[in-house]
Structure formats: structure tokens, C-alpha cells
Length: 210
Length: 183
Image (cartoon, rainbow over all chains, first blue to last red; front, side, top):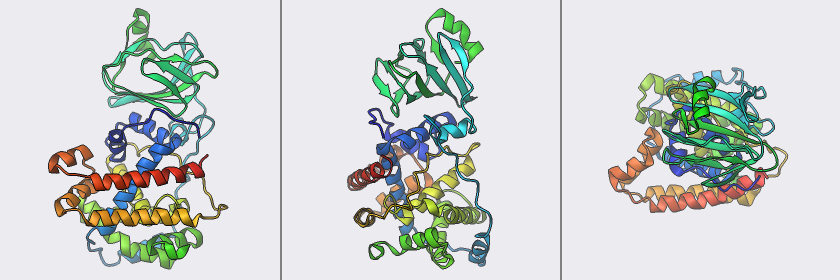
């Protein structure tokens, strides 16, 4: 497993675990947990605490017959297995891709994207940025989480490689530039449409929904 | 190795390796009433709480192959399943899940690591039992009702130092586990 420098906060882990994150963000968190030992351990250690509390919980009364119904239900067929990761895409991303490879849309300058989901709570997309290319400078009105799946990018916050997550709040204006080597593939979630500064990208924004 | 495991974890391993229905029955007897208490505390009413308990325990039966005593004890693993099922009830889309760790049936269990994890669970339980009632209640609110942890400390001015240091120890250990499992 590669070394990961940029992790997700305890607050994000707790919000994810409580089901309080919009879908787009929860996928980025689940994808990071698939790649990062350290955050996976923080996540699973919380389940251990939950388990210790469960063991100590006062037992509620279970209705008569519940045990028999349970034992009879054991012969039902198991649910289909969870999706598996493929290539650079961990399982939660493959689930969003419905098990198929990405279908990229060209955005110009060699940059490609596929929108995985978009609704009022936020949007989730895959971005493909050729080496040395910049994503147009942008601010955003809310939170943005960007997970690197392949290659790397650098911006004012540092260098990000596979497994790293950038957590950007609306006070950050950043211009990610893809590093040399393999094209940079990122999973990005936002809770508001991005604002681009250059005139042309702003005009393109409604068309491409970036 | 089995002497060092809790009875519950041993039962779960018997379910995993031998589809042992008697062992599953014992897990049901221990966890079903406690899971129901958790669901009631989380705001479900009697009937739907019990339906969800059945659902959780059926998942325990079907997913037992994923139980890994290097990374969790039975209670922690089952709590994780219960947390997910309850959240999925309230969400439009099921909660996105991290990739399952690779199965390791071929690997010999590392008794030392399993024991260390089990001891950590014991330390956690001991730390919980030393908490003042209102502190324990605040923790239950966080884990059974899923209030944000920051809200919990606001509400109680709770010094979670002991628990946090336990988390850290647990983390360190789990991190080593994960590293050895998924290089």
C-alpha cells in the first residue's frame, strides 16, 4: 500500500459513520477508507467502541417466536456479493460506475470527466487530467473533497498522490496541476457548483456541468 | 488460540468456518436483545426495531466469512453491521461501503495479534465501566443515536481522555493489522 500523506478528519469519519454525509462525499470517504490503512483503522476502532457499548447495553425483551423465525430464515439465499475494485478504482467507485469502465467526456485541453451522480445535495465526478495540465482555477461555495486514484497533482495546499484526499473549504482558491508521469485521475465531490475564474470556463460551466 | 478468544468471538468463528447453527443461536441470544435496545434508543419503535435486528443478524450469518479476529471482536464487528443497516433505512441510497479486505483463509491466524486485539477490547470495556453514568450515557448517545461527537462534549463537558487514549492504542494495533493484511 502506498504512503498516504493527506487523510480525512475525525469529524468527516464520524459524519460518514452516522450517515450524515451527502452521497457524493460518502463515496469519497469510503474510497479513501479502501486505500488508507490509517483511516480504516480509525474507522474500525470506533466500531470496537460501539461493540463494547453494545455488550454493556441493557437487554430489551425480544418477542416470543423471534428466535424461531430467525433460525428458519438462515436458509434464505445470501445477497449478491459486494462489488470489487478494478484497476485504479476501489470497490465504492466501481459501484458508482455500475461495474463498467468510465465513459469520459472531453472538457478541452485533454481534460476529461465523468459525472457519477449529481443532485441538490452535491455532485460526484471522476476527473482525468493529462500530466502538466491545470484544472482551471476555481473556488467553490461549499466543501470539496478530492481523492487521487492515479498519478498526482500539486496545488497551493501541497502534493497529492494516490490515496491522498484534499479537503477544500470555500476559502480556498486553488489551481491543481497534474504531476508528471501517469495522467492524474481523481474522484471529486462538491456540495455546490464550482465557480471558475476565467471567462471561458465560466461560459462552459452550464454546458459541461463542471 | 481459542482459549484466548471471548466466547462470542469463538461462536462467530464457528459460524464462519462451520456454519454452526447452535453457535449462531448463542450469538442471537446475546446480541438480539442488545441490538433491539440500540435500535429503540436510536428512535425505532418495537416492531421495526425487531425487524431490523432480524435483518442485522441475518447479515451476520451471511457475511460471517468476512469476520477477522485480528481486526475486531464479535461485538465490534456486529455493531458495525447494525450501524450500517440502521443508516440505510434512513437514506435514499445505501451508504457507500469501503472495499472488503481480502479473505485470508489460507493464512494461519496470528495468535499474538488476535490476543492483543482481544485485550484491547477488554481494556476498552474496563475504561467504559469506570465512566460516570452521565459520561457513559453521552457515549451511548454518540454510538446508538449518532449525535456528532463534538455535540456530545458540548452537552456534557465530557473528558474523553481515557477513551481517546484507548482509541489511539486500538488504532495503532489495527493499523499494524491492516498493513500486514493488505501490503
